[in-house]
Amino acid sequence: MSETVVHPTPEILIRFHPLNRLSDIQLELLGRSIQIHSAGRGLKILQQGDTTTFSLYLIKGKLRLHSSDGRITEIIDGSPQAQNPIANLIPRRYTVETLMPTEYLMIDNGLLDGLLSTEEGITATELDGDRPPYDRAVAENQLTEALLGDLNNDKLMLPSLPDVAVRVGRAMRDETTNARKLASIVQTDPAITTKLIRAANSPLYAGVTAVDSCAAAIVRLGADTTHKLVLTFALRELFNTRSSVLKAHMRSLWEHSVKVSAVCYILAKVSDEFNPEHALLAGLLHDIGNVAILSYAERFPEVANDNEKLEQVMQDMRGRIGSVILRNWGFIEDLIMVTKEAENWFREHEGEADYADLVIVAQLHTYIGSPEMMRLPTLDQIPALNRLDLGELTPKLSLKIVDRADEMITQARAMLMC
Image 1 (cartoon, rainbow, N blue to C red):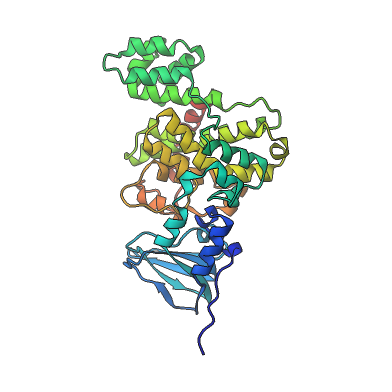
Image 2 (cartoon, rainbow, N blue to C red):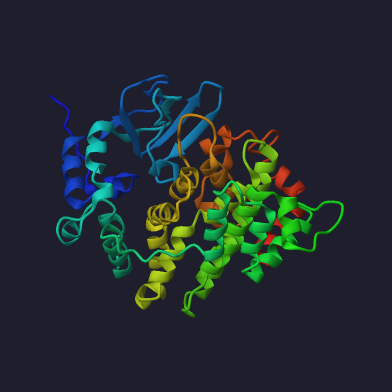
């Protein structure tokens, strides 16, 4: 008697990323094309080194992952780790073993890529007909519909990079630019001028004597650091809203971004693999998409007044909108990648650590000891930590360096919050 084939329902498939980007019809078609696999306790369902191109998803049960260096990770159904494909890099870096009776999916990557291939090309017609990728997963209120509609019709209202930051960036591309010319541009914004001088005199950059002019501050900091700090200071004015309902959200967003920036700066100093000022900027920009979302929310009081709905929209749309903003500003790809991947806790990629890895680790540091940590993975569970060269920073001692550098973090935060 042949074994009964059980197909996953759309309700099962939508639990997983990136399957939650698919439309109702796509989920139905995918479910009919694949089946739910079962395995008893103690079976190896994936071998290290395997090159078969499929994605493994855990529906029910518990898995143990063994790496070549002896590390062991356990994943249980319903956990944040189980929402993403497991051991997805090819060739596989882990052997995956079941710890109890388990149900799982094996989805051919070619099939999945085909379904997701229209993600960047959603049209207004599709929005009114069959729901496109992303839409079914996140279009739960009018705010999301407005964001999707404007985004895909190139009508999204994007925040503008402050003028002084644009002009400094333009001057940086001119080989004849010197400290005096940069100072003349920066000084058109008195608030940023004050912050730049204060930064040059802070313990982070201070020399033997204090500087008292913008030009002297630029000489001390250097053109590249000046540029990144001007960008950083200029971003503060974007984190504002006219809505009294949303002011607390925007303030919280800024404070979170500042804290992540400060930790990024310290971790970059420790690793020697990253430019600290670029890391500072990466941390500050990682949630820039939420600035646009909160600005849109002013028009939708039914969402602005519902924290749960608003948080869901930000969670689902922040990365996509953030990448559009940074591309519009002409930022380089490593920062665009940060906006896309900053909360992809189990992100895998080939090659050396990048700024997205740094921001992921920094974010988890900022959550340690808070209620949010209960719903997040621990540092020893995320691939980003293993890619970073942080010396003695191990999962058990993950905060040791940050604790020792607490004063520097305070100084970095003070520089941004002033």
